[in-house]
Every structure is written in structure tokens, then in C-alpha cells.
Picture 1 (cartoon, protein in one colour):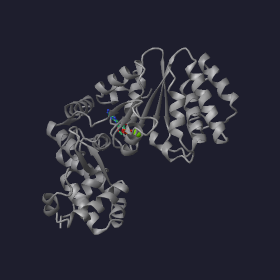
Picture 2 (cartoon, protein in one colour):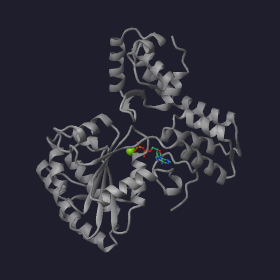
Picture 3 (tube, helix red, strand yellow):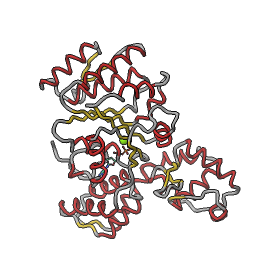
Length: 378
Ligand SMILES: Nc1ncnc2c1ncn2[C@@H]1O[C@H](COP(=O)(O)OP(=O)(O)O)[C@@H](O)[C@H]1O
Ligand SMILES: [Mg+2]
């Protein structure tokens, strides 16, 4: 595999060298699946769930194969089937004896097979009624279950199935997978409230059927060493304080850490000074400014005031408290609640739980947070 020019990846997964830490998470995942337990991964977007799945696959023991399916683009069961089949075809090359078996099996379902013009990888698609799509998915699962090795199927952005027009998909899927012993599942999703409901409400079919693993931000000291190591290996000097500042600026949110480091690395400077990284940070905000002005124009004044307050605080645990409201002149608790609700609906803010179980609110997009923060409070 070719080495990346820039060691700070901002999309995809390359190999463990370019992946910071996640040792505990990887061990736990391996442990669960080897002991027959399916797992659900949740976190806000861009923390590193997809990366972790790829890292897990890289570290699977002998005799295991990983199949990765991202179902975000799918809108119904037929498209789910197409994605799953495509992922299976891409996991094992046709040349291998197992691959031949898989291809023969898949072809028996009469998909339309085409080749992606860019990557030349096969793509399968089907045109079927719901009952037939269900039957095909069940038979693929059965086929995989009967192979003489173990399989992990990771279904990324799993909450998407709740948007399919077909009814009770989760009940049906649960019944398909629950008796499987050679195939383990990892479900992953960024829309935490939907994922949480699917797996922790007693009325839902997937209730308690998996171990739930919430993915947190990376450990700061691990990230610091990772960043320092890569700059050092390329003969670039960067002080501990500057790394610290960049981690603060990006709130230790994986994607944004990678992004600022990627840009700073790309400047080609041998010595990373305060001016160098701050200029890159400024450019990142500038690039997005049109989008940000557009976001702002869609907000009411109370919503914008609340955004500024949250941007300023970073994390807010008591948005309707007297203290918070008077500090930022936000009016009444009911106004704040109304704004909060619509900012969450529009995915500008998210709510999550602290380790102690308290709910908190924060801005989704760190760049938008930094941009918003630059406006004076009223
Ligand atoms: N442990 C890690 N070390 C370095 N980069 C990572 C790590 N985890 C994720 N990334 C990078 O961060 C970005 C966001 O990660 P991703 O896995 O896509 O997040 P999610 O699936 O939670 O939305 C990607 O560009 C990915 O390459
Ligand atoms: Mg992802």
C-alpha cells in the first residue's frame, strides 16, 4: 500500500501507523466478538467510529473476515441488499476459492453487476419487491453462516434503517441475525438518540441485544505523542505548547485535530511557530465562512445568541439555569428551551451525557464554534 504524503489523514483508514491509540476500544471489540457478542458503537460524528471499525478489521485474528457496509446512502431494503452484496463481493477477490464460491452464490440471486468506473470495483444492484429483498438478505446471511471461518459484518450509520419505508425492519433483522453463531455484527451510528432508542428501549427489537460501546475523544497525552511523533519523523519541529494549543482549538475532536495538523503539516514549514498554525486555523474558518453566514442567517436572534453563548462556553450543562441565562442575557428559560430544541433539530447543537450521566450541550462543528465565538456577546 502506498504511504500517504501527509500522515494526518482526514478521510479513510490506512494502517495502524496513521491511527492514534484506541487500544482499549480495539481490545474490547475483539473480546466481545470473539465471545459471541454483537456490539453497538455510538458517538457524535467525526470522533472515529468508522476508523475504529477499519482498525478492528486490520487487527482481526486468523480465520476471521470483516465486511464493512455503510448504509447512509440507502433508502430502502433493496438498496440495503445491494450495499451488503457489493461489500461482500469487494471483501473477497473472485480469484480466491472462497471468492469463487461467493460470486457463484451472489450471481444466483441475479443482481445487476457493474464496475465502478473509477475504482473498477464490482457493484451489485437488485430490483426486487420487499419480500424478495428480505428473502435474499436472509439467504446471504445463511450462506455466510455456513462458511468455515468467522465473519464480522459492520453496519455503519445503522440508524438509517429507521428511515426505510418498510415496516418493522429492525424486528425482522433481529430475527435473522439472532441465531447466527459464525457471523458477528458491529452496528455503528452517529445519531445517538436514535441509536440509543433502538438498543436501550425495552419496546424495541434490538433492546439489550448488543454490548453498547460509546466512543469518546482520544486521550490527550496519546494524541500529543502521535502528533509530535509524525512531525518529528519528517524533520519538522513543533513545541509541546503548540500541539497543546492545536488540541485545545480543535477541542480534541478527532476530525478537527486531524484537519488542523494536516494543514499545518502541508505548509511545508520546518519550524511550526504560533503564526504558522494560527494562520492555518484562520484559513480553515475563512474557507467555510459562506456556509457559516448562511447558517447564521437561518437562525432567529435568540437562537444566535444561544449559539454564541454555547460557543463561548464550549460545553453547557445547565442551559436554563439563572446563572447561564443572565450571564449571556438570554431572556427566559422557555425561550432558551425553544431555541435549544430547534438548534438540536437542525444539528447545530448536540446533546450527550457526561461520564457521570449528566446531560450536556455542545456545538457539532468545531469550525463553526470557533467562527461563532469570534462575534461579540451582546
Ligand atoms: N484514532 C485515530 N487516529 C487518527 N485519525 C483518526 C482516528 N480515528 C479517526 N480518525 C480520523 O478522523 C476522521 C473522523 O473519523 P471517522 O472514523 O470518520 O469518524 P466517525 O465515523 O465517528 O464519524 C477521519 O478522517 C479519520 O481518518
Ligand atoms: Mg463514520
